Length: 153
Image (cartoon, rainbow, N blue to C red):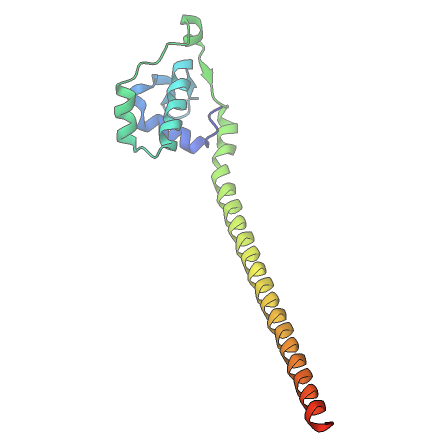
């Protein structure tokens, strides 16, 4: 829903705990629970992070804002649980996969740059060769013309 990793979600819950419900930072072994208000706050945190604000700046901004209470009493009691523990554990491995994918992307980018460089060198070599041949032919034509002009006349 927030399009962030579980690690980031946990970190944001810790950084901005004073603005979130107690269910967002449960004791060890308990599932995190988010109210609708929590989700709205975290969406706002995401937008402020995208602007490059620091944790302190975001907390200061959150202090000055009022978020609507989206939940009624029944919903608050049974607030939204984010992924069971086993799924969360699996998602904790996602950052490692992301790091591996980023490394692969860097390798692909390097290969593409090397390929582009090789293509430029090939093009430059062919261009220089073509220009050299044209100059050689032009020089030969001039010599033949001069030989014919002075030699035959």
